[in-house]
Length: 491
Image (cartoon, rainbow, N blue to C red):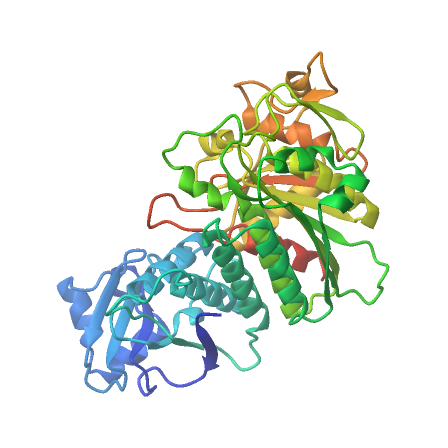
């Protein structure tokens, strides 16, 4: 992890740190830590509140320097709004704004007292977990292909005030998983190739407990009849890999595993149906579904979750070439079903359908696939919610609840049989696109044809996997949702 995190029970007025972080509410009401700082400083905070120089509005930030009676050099006041109605979204927003404010400046050693703050329907452990994950997320910087700029600084260590007996293990594991997912997503496509992802999995197998890896190469996939996946791979000089990561955490080694399948298109040019040049650089993020599987498997292994979990990542590059697959081609999938290609830029579902067929050999308890699958999902839900599709109401509720718990939310879309007719074609069992309407849903309907005899759900993360623009980057979503869902299953 980029950020060093530990716990403390030190008094906020006497703790040694570059900066301490405390909360203030509306109407000048102070949190216990802010009240202690105010008492030590002879009422300095209350005077500033009365003058209007300190706001308790949600996520408002105020810096104070060299307060008399306070050991820390600086105090960061974070607005929390109405104390009686502080909920999870507002708490997480306050954490994010506090962490952002600390990214610049000379305060590298931080002690935060925000975890003491009561949040509606959330435990002290939840508050601590979100604190760690949020601050770690903001502390992350992508430096692999760039040097640290002169004058760049930020948090290096974070101590969080918490009661004795509180645990950092799960939160640090999740934060590390999110960071791994973001790092893989941010890597340029000339580095993060299918082989690079496979090598990353092998490195993880050398460091994580109860973790093993199997890598399938082209010849093995040909023997399995993975014509859909291999069709997408034909145009690239970078050979495909099917990456299988296994975490054995259940006491019963034969217990049915939970399988996560992540789309791993390490670069998507669109193939023969080539994309417009503007924004094509962002298609390095088309492997973020696979990246989230790496992150989730890393997290569950680090925390020692009592489940068997398998991650499957079909890693492929979609490129135009003299041997590339074409619109009009008919591919035969591993399941035996044939697919007419109407658009080579609808490639993610082609690699996922073979991965779903392959995953059935593990006799899974549940399969969840995660993919930056459709621009239509971005149009429907924007950048906030993942698109969730499944025929299983109980599974939908499990995933939605997990997302609400950690504020990594999804929204359920229908995949009624009414939509299936949009995939009809006279030249194969199905087409790979369903026309211009309901594009996210017909993509889910396509995948559902390969998951008819298994408990399955699909998460479309096309809008949530990365922030757009040159200064944007991979978000690491939905690692938190996936890990929370698995933690709920392990209790």
